[in-house]
Amino acid sequence: MGALTRIAGMKFEDGFSRARITAIWIFAALKSGIRIDEIRAVVPVIPNEFKILDKVSPAQLSERERQEIICRVANRINDITTRWYVVNMRDRITPDAVKDSIKENFPLLFSQIHFFYPTHNIYREGKNKKKVKVETPFIPGLLFIKVKSDMVGSVMNSVRNIAWGYKQHNTPDSPYSVISQRAMTDFQKHIGMFSDDVRMEMVTRKEPLAVNDPVIVHGDSIDGSIGEITEIKEVNGVKTYSIRLTHNQSFSWSVKIDDELRLEPLYTHKKKALTESA
Image (cartoon, rainbow, N blue to C red; front, side):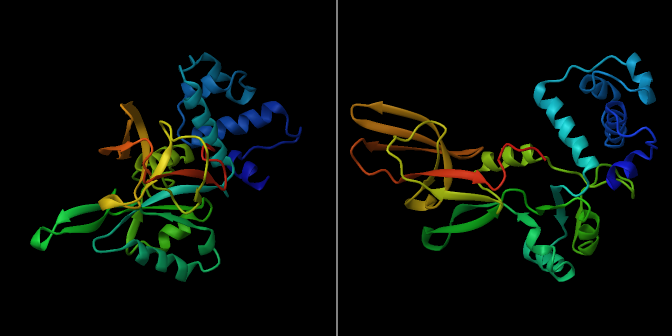
């Protein structure tokens, strides 16, 4: 309740009516940077405190855009929500250095923080034309951190000498930029790698592999890679699987139908649903 009154700064002698709660929501939406035409599109009945919004034409929003706005405002009101943020590590600083600094300053909070620094293997030609595996980050220098929003300022301040957090605006009092859970989930699915709050398990099933199935590859230079089946063709007893590893890396694998296929299905699920918005 304290968070609500702190955000709105209003008096509630007549209690928390629907109109009062709507007024708090609108106030939080304005503080979150939501445009007034977007607010008008989400809120069908405007309370007296914001009656001027009746003169605003509603924006045309898709259902997804509407839900993203609702979640964004909910996060503003509920300031203990755990959300994803991103920091830019300074030159020659590693993710482990950032983690160690946070652990030293927040030993009790550390176990509740999730870190995500996705990498993938690139094979280059080394000496004697031998392939050398090089672990390469998808986005060099950017470390994703999932932490309670009421602690993000303290956490960012504790690593200010080795990294800096992205903010919504270039002002000292600007809030830190939030990556929605939907956007983070889409990103992780796209690159085929997941943060430590997502668990992957091998499963055995009788059904054959199908398009859009996530799989793990065994063997050759891409052993252990995670990808997604994009196409399956069958011609004269031979199946060809097209596998997408990343947005710009794909390969095809042709096998006789009776041969063992070195692809295993993956079942992915989150401690909270992957599609949950934050």
